Length: 112
Image (tube, rainbow, N blue to C red; front, side):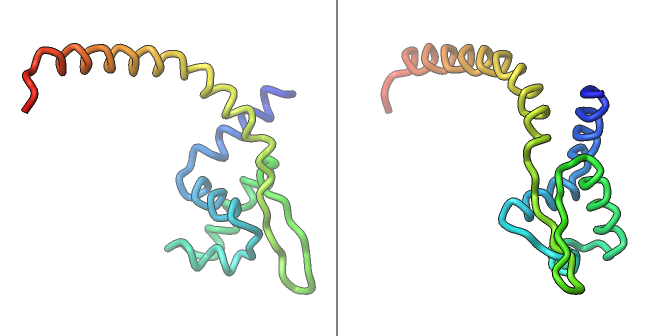
C-alpha cells in the first residue's frame, strides 16, 4: 500500500502546474478562484489539478460558507524528499570534483 501512495505523490508532483499550485498553497490557504488568478488555465483545469493533489493527500479542503479553501499538507512530500536525498551523494561527489578542478586551475593562472 505504501508504494501505491508514494507513486500517487510522485505522479501528482510530476506536473509543473500542480507544483506551482503547491508553491502557492505553501504561502497560505486559497480558494479555486484565487488560484485561477495565478495561472493562465481555466477553472475546471485548476479544479482537476486540485483533485489530483487531494487524491495524493497533498491538499486539504475546508468549506466556509459557499467557499472551499485549499491548504497544503506537505507530509506526503517526505517520500519525494527521501528519494531525492538518496541522490545527493552523487551530486556532492560531482561538485567536490568540480571544486577540485577549479582550485587546481586557479593555482595555475597568475593573478590578474
